[in-house]
Amino acid sequence: MADVDVFISNYTIIDPEIYQLWIEGFSSSEAVSYLKQKGFGHSMGAPSDLIASDVLDHYRTYSLIELYLNAPTKLMEQSCFQLEPQMRDLITEKYYSIDDVVAREILGKKLSSRYRKDLDEVAEKTCVKLKSVRRQFDNVKRIFKAVEEMPGTLTNNIKQHFIISTDLAKKYACIVFLACLRFETTKKKLQYLSFSDLLTCSHAIMIYWTYTYQHTGPEYYDTEMDKEFLLDLRELRCLLDKEKEIKHPCI
Image (spheres, rainbow, N blue to C red):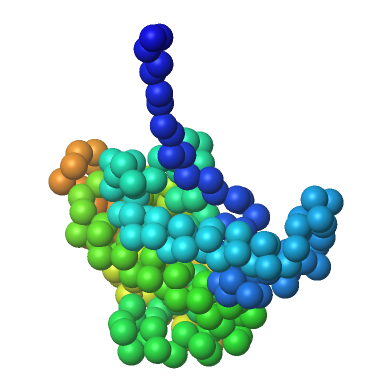
């Protein structure tokens, strides 16, 4: 009798389109309706109940994976869900994706449970589904708590601990930075500024106005303003007094 070697694989199947709908806060029934409108399964003649069953199965899987996505480094170590490295990176990046309009609304607000209860107002204002807004808020709060007192640069710390791209880490670094230094971004005079505007400004300040600009090492933070630099800025006050003369010099 010949010996037979058997290998059983249990790779988890992730459907990018269904996962995206889950990320955007669609309920399973809303996702089924959306997919039907797009003709999902039509070419194979799949009945509606089979599509609904498939979507619901995917949603259950994503809800279980979400427990590990709260700490992406654990997702890499766990063995319950066998995922290809590229797919693992994709679902992590998508899970921590954040809409600029939602980020702009969160800026300047306390990341408290009380504010979380009022996120329906943010959802209504931004036209983003409430479930998605809550996911984004919880991610911001989680990342803030993890890196607010961590030495080094915010972007690198966020990339390392949450396994996301540089561009996405920069967005969270902006939010954490402005929250740590308590910038009042909700003032009426600043309402016209988009999240992209604040992102550009905050990273310029982190690069040139904090201790990590002139110092390197794990003991330096880019959430601490360089006090010597700020003291030097006082000398610029005299220029404010001569603002008109500078703008309109006498010929």
